[in-house]
Image 1 (tube, rainbow over the protein chains, first blue to last red):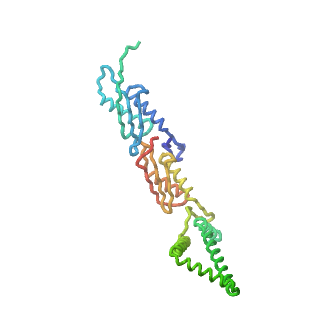
Image 2 (cartoon, each protein chain N blue to C red):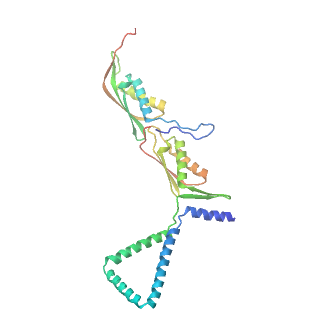
Image 3 (cartoon, rainbow over the protein chains, first blue to last red):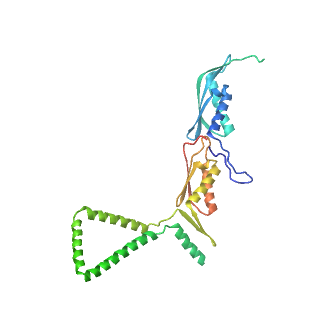
Length: 115
Length: 188
C-alpha cells in the first residue's frame, strides 16, 4: 500500500492521504486494456513493475480481429499503448514509462444482427 | 546570567554527554584495593619472619613463570588494551544522540530519534510518499533523508529539503539537509 498525494494543513486544505494498493492499480490497468484492446477482461493479463522510478506495464492480450476491419496489429498495439499511458495518467496519476504489448492468440469478433 | 540558566546549562551538558562515572569508580576501586593490599603486605613483611620466607618463595615461582615468553606478553597486551580504552573514555567527548536548546525560562532536550521521526512524517506529507518509505538519519550537523518513490510518481527533492528545514526550524534547530531519492521505486 502506498501513501499518495498528501498535503500540509494550509488555507483550509483537509489533511489526508489517498492510497492505491498495487492490486487496485493492476485491476485498473486490466480495465483500461480491456477497453482499448476490445477483448474480454478474462483474456487480459497485466503485470506492473518499476523501471527506474517510472511504471512499466507488460500486457498480454489476444489479437482482436474483426471480420472486414481495416487496422493492422501494429496500429492496434500502438492504440493499446497510448490508451494505457493516457488512462493511467488520467485515472491514477501515474507516469508510465514503458508498455510492452504481447499478443497471445487470436480473438475473432463476429458481427451479428441485433434482434 | 541567572542561577536557573547556570543550572540549565549544567543539566543540558549532563544529559547530552555520556557519564564516565562507572569506569572512574571501577578504576578508583581497583587502585584503592591494590594500594591497601600493598600497605598490608608491607607491614606484614616487616613484622612476620614466616610471611617473608613464604612471600619470597612465591615471588620466585612467579619469576620462573615469567621466563616463559607468552605469559608476560599476554598480560602486557591485555593491560595495554585496558589502558587504551581508559584513555579513549577520558579524551572522547562521549556525545549522546540528543540535542539541547535553552531559552530564558526553559531548557529543551530532544532525542535525535524524535527529530528523525517528525522530519520523516513531514517529508512524507509534503512529497506524498508513504511514511514507511521515508527513512531519516539525524547526524550532528546534517540530516539525511532517503526516499523510495512510488513508481510513476516523481518526487521533488527541493520539496523534501524544504520540509526538513522547516520542521527543524519549527523546533529551533538547524542542520544541513541531504535528500537521496532511490533510483528504483515501488509499484503502489
